[in-house]
Image (cartoon, rainbow, N blue to C red; front, top):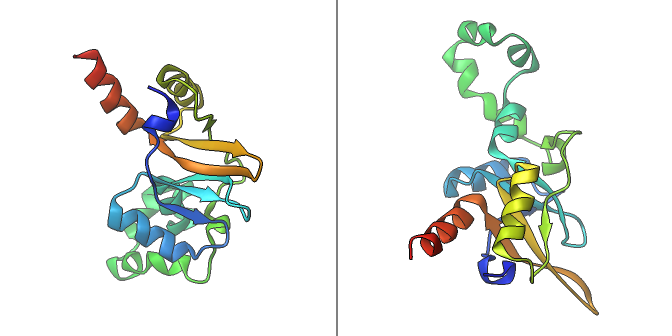
Length: 154
């Protein structure tokens, strides 16, 4: 199995996409993360749902989680207001590493090794030609595991 054969279409967002729309996309499709593309359409970052949630939680609660117990439900229900007017780039951590990128001819084992080393939930498969680089699709950890299990039990 080659990366090109494993790559699937996957939801992506741009750095300047609306953060609320990105959160809705994650929630509606129950995605563990979104692939964030730069202005040229190249993979820039992976935005985990946990990072999006962190954006919603007030800093003082992150610093001292016991304070969460004293926030009333009315205020807790308004957490998503923190996303209004924000862009996806505002939700990325400054320590966000670049996404793992595989070449179309990489083997399943090469993809798995990259994914394991980076502890990444997904790998972007990017092809290069005379026109430049283009995203061919994404391989998620769960899909790769499914495919490896299917070939291992055959």
